[in-house]
Image (cartoon, rainbow, N blue to C red; front, side):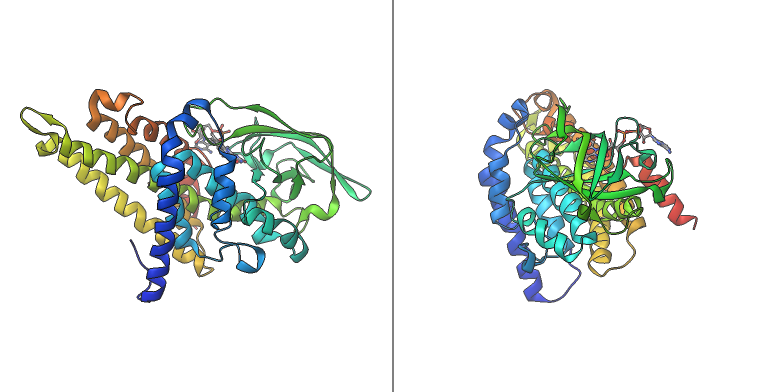
Length: 384
Ligand SMILES: Cc1cc2nc3c(=O)[nH]c(=O)nc-3n(C[C@H](O)[C@H](O)[C@H](O)COP(=O)(O)OP(=O)(O)OC[C@H]3O[C@@H](n4cnc5c(N)ncnc54)[C@H](O)[C@@H]3O)c2cc1C
């Protein structure tokens, strides 16, 4: 485990949390992974159980019902869950970093007290809506609008690819309150399930991450109390970018978990599988693959914990979190691809775990900003 402290008590506490997440994943997630994947079943009860353990509000202060932990512990939790199931890892990451993280960072005291205890304990599941059908990477051109009418905002439009769009009890939604294409024309508001005019659309039938629910959100003259606005009107885009700075650490952690899961399965298989009278691990062609995987996983882990360290200390993290997300997600795709190769024909079946890592990993280079967008962010920072 990569440490940024010599404090033995802190190291022991972190190890205890990592172990708890790992044991939960082994006992309550692993037995059902393929069943949930096949059925595209989003395991709400498992989320509630994780909420009881503090895993749904890892970064939320204890006074607001959370676990009150830091980013290193948060990374460890997501890694341990994603090693077993990337889809559950994605949902935990989205709930913690996006919806919950946005309200934690930009809500006023009243808003935090209203929503965070429910989110942090898993009583409520959170969603976060930035992306629209025609505006993904170019989110600034979003077209969902909110217009003030008395003491309510009236929201019209739709959001696509929203994690927990159907089951979510509450969503933070970025809406246009000003000029199209202007970063200052966007605001962030909290919309609860059951608000008149708020429904969900179709559930996506996905390549991977199938146990994580992804749907459209639809707003048809949806009336939202104006006190649900987060921070100042017109700052929603800036808020979303800050939320993504933290969110990218969680997608990097998700990637790391998938890469580790695929790597560990490949190491075990390479020692067990015999061809030409010996374990395939004896062939340099296979052992060099494992050496590359181990090296790239460790490098990703260092970058992720550097980003976690910066975030814990309130330091600028935009460049390093984009680097961590870019590198770890590409490494996850590479490691899971190589793991399938090491398993040979068996890797191409659903009887072994690596085909699922292979399918799940691809989301990591797309969600919360594609690899190309991470490179834009990194280049902008480098050329400042
Ligand atoms: C499973 C899943 C869960 C998701 N969950 C959420 C969620 O909870 N909330 C939410 O708001 N969104 C969510 N998303 C949306 C996700 O963030 C977007 O899919 C992502 O940002 C990419 O947008 P896009 O799909 O519209 O692709 P596009 O922006 O259309 O990109 C298409 C291609 O063009 C490239 N490209 C675009 N612009 C540039 C450029 N300037 N330079 C170089 N290349 C470029 C991209 O890298 C990509 O390869 C989710 C997506 C998925 C698949």
